[in-house]
Image 1 (cartoon, rainbow, N blue to C red):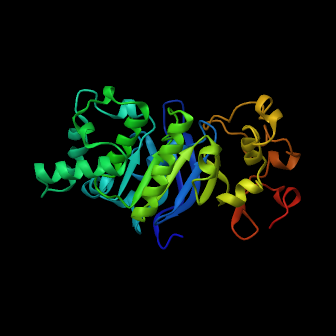
Image 2: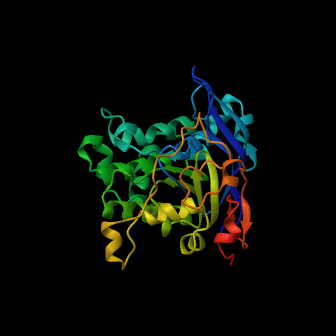
Image 3: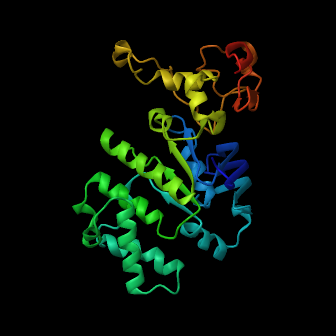
Length: 328
């Protein structure tokens, strides 16, 4: 169980401002991650997951504006001066990006890429100490030390993803942000990377925020889950409870899109949702989900509720939740 909060988002919003008009990609998100805790964020493509990750270390473009607070160990990232945010990146919070192939320099050896942030953030580092740290990092992610001399193209997809994890761990961050870390991997590779990430979080008492569109990725690896739709969190709670009894109709639809173990029919005819998520710059009135919701009523077209408590540890943004779900 987490002992302290290392990352907290308070009413965080991010809006892009292209020439066509404002696009609210993240809207009023509240979530926290404790030391040693793994928190998952799930939702369809375009729901704001990756944008949410970008707010933590201010990695968004210049045409974006933000509101709210992002606290790392109690310090607001949005209020930091440039030198401070530069030190926080990698030093206190780091990112494992989605595409290892695009994140690694193809013409530099792995060892040099791993050593670079060590020299940037530790002015007392020497060639010998950096080389020792690189060997330790490779060992931690299950790779032999000889891979320090390899180029990215000489490694498999799973090996490159392990290098991305090692790269994020070079400066012993308190928070690890994982943006779809297993998307390009096969099933076995996914399981190995997720086990590795979960073990690292526990061993280092490091908070981890992992985002995915695949609920099966998060099911057995997260302590708590937040479900996003149209830039907002529409359900959150303890992972085991959320998967045992999803409360929001969107969460139920996400789970229905995956085959059920023991149900042969679900492998060939998984349920799903009609239509697509709304464009953030042209959201429907009321509840953003109502055009696709199977239980929507006229009231849903005008009423947009925030997260409501369901039971002890669950929150759901749906006016029908009390009728549809028996709170535990």
